[in-house]
Image (tube, rainbow, N blue to C red):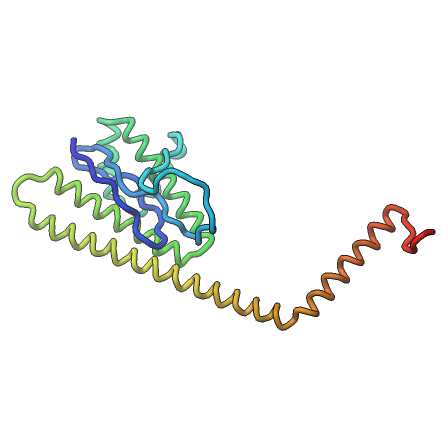
Length: 223
């Protein structure tokens, strides 16, 4: 059975690239990692699995299946027929695919609350990836003339790359705004250094007096 090669995650942040693409034979195929970093990584990180390894999908439940299918029905309904075929022929692959879709829907919902603009780009990126994946599946299962599908696949891949570039640009602009905010904060702190020291010292001395009073300690030094 043919399988997709591992996909190297694009630079910048991406979201919701479900870790599978579906072939016309109804087999779940390996794909990109679920989420690229949506926040700036910390300066030092513990060792972890290689980026190309997808984390295991969530445990399959009927509730998660319903949520995943609702997400697909709303955002990429043409996937439903493929999922139904997999469910009949390869139940284990179906449960894995549903888990991946559920995880993607949860991550997108989280991003939507945090940053609606980033959510819109992330959702479009996921939809574009799935469209390219389905065209890939058609190409794998099609015999004879494939030129038309190849043209469609190239256009789909161009859309995926275009959205990746948009996502990276969005992240750059967001980081530039944060950097500008930090610069202003730094300048403010520098210009009020003495005042900040006085305020901090006054607060600490007040806390000292409160602690002494609560423990019945005389504020004056005893001989």
